[in-house]
Length: 339
Picture 1: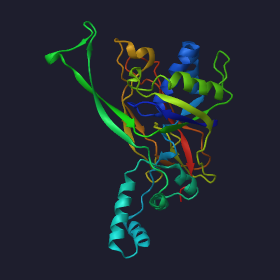
Picture 2 (picture 1 turned 90 degrees about the vertical axis):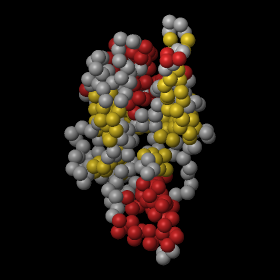
Picture 3 (picture 1 turned 30 degrees about the horizontal axis):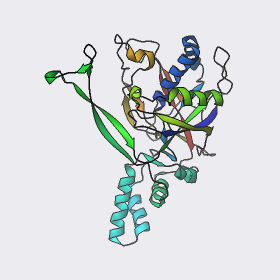
Picture 4 (picture 1 turned 120 degrees about the vertical axis):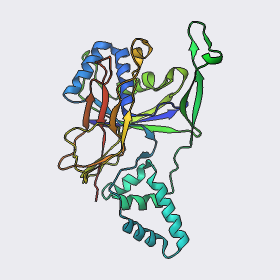
């Protein structure tokens, strides 16, 4: 599969994170509006054999998720602190504080993976992050914005007890911010109308259908608007001696992934997704999908043998009423060599 990087510049506040399954959903609606429903149905049916395209989550440019690794012991941590700080107690306290803070980070510079891709473990990762002083994460403010419901009979808000306020959490980026996500696609794939899936088509869909008019929740009011900067070759630092993978997407594991506790390290989240497109305006259909337990980006698996292009699947039966709704639950792998 061909691996590419998509670079976006954010132009508005963001009410929905750039997650792989949501990007996939927007992509599917773009196919339906461009080629027709029959083309979309056939496209989704191809996933029963192998996926024509998969997506990673989106991340601030030059950052990737922090790998979940087997943590060093307290004794090893103290030896590392002593080696860095000597006998100065103030320096030791400061180093402990920094390490505790690093434990809470969910994103780290991509450059760290470039340096450590052939020798990554928890100790080396901590040392690299303590030494890294180059890249600053984008500055952002998260706020809950209050809205009021509108009575569609009167076109007015309610009064007195009829007032119904609700909040939407939005992220506002203070500085100019770029986001990146990655795609893998089959260069030989053709839609059933003969159109080939290639860079030009992908760039056009990204630019003119998915991101120009908003992404995710509240996109009709201007939230989640991005400008496509480029679709280019991937810069992911894959290890050439890989024995493990880190997921760059939220996913549901399949049977080919190891389940032994010493070979997998992961976080879980319950995804409460919603349908979009034409279905979003149908009052006879619930907008919410079934809750899905997913592993998050940053999850790590130790792999025996050859590493696949992807793991996971396209989930079915994810909506209580609409059986044609699917959920992207593929693991987008970054190859690592864990020591």
